[in-house]
Length: 303
Image (cartoon, rainbow, N blue to C red; front, side):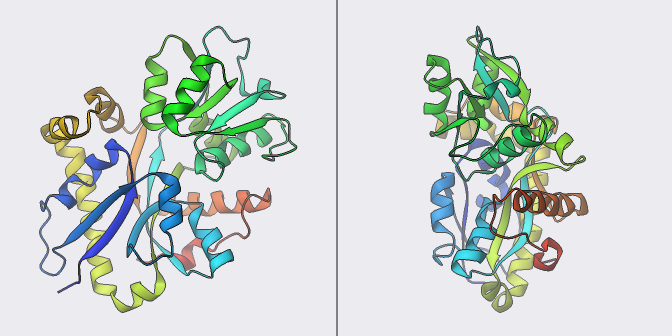
């Protein structure tokens, strides 16, 4: 029998859908029967990495290279997720703004959910590769502002920032708001700038020491994570109301996330396309000096 697993993941109601079967005992296992799932904001996830509080985490892609370079933490990849299908995260400005393209953010303020978030990194890359803008957070062509998603959404509506990169619930709310306009799909622009890579933001990770000591249990978790995703894809309308009642999330947002992969793709596992796209992401981030080192993704995959 496996010891209980503390699993930390992203604090987003669409993710509560994806992990619903896992957290509610709907996937049977002979050896792995106890989970404690915590939903954390992205900064909290990053801070928890390497503390030992969570055996397995779904964290930002940014966590792994920094943890390895600064803390010597040997994180390995158990799967990849939080993919964007081309109609997910986007650049938004006020509806009456003169800005009609991300290229016009030169000399302007642009808000992001976190300076080290994948959304910010992908935005920096797109602005540099596609529009030729200097991307450093300090001293570049753009003044960057870091705010939590609800505050960031309000900031662009009120004109406190000239634009913002919005995703998940904040992005969905922005898309419905006539006071705002979408001037560029970040995920589609990123894919174009990286020769068709899948745009995605998270990896399921664990420290190698834990994996080596609990290999069978880790493999069982991977199987159950994939089945939880399949269950959500096939049955999310049957339990979405339960999540709506518990958190107050709009049911339309859950449908926007789960009804098609044109917006978001919850979990790609270790599919080859996702592995190749992860490698492309780390390579280009390192090339632009955004990450301390590139990674050999294949060598760090636990399959």
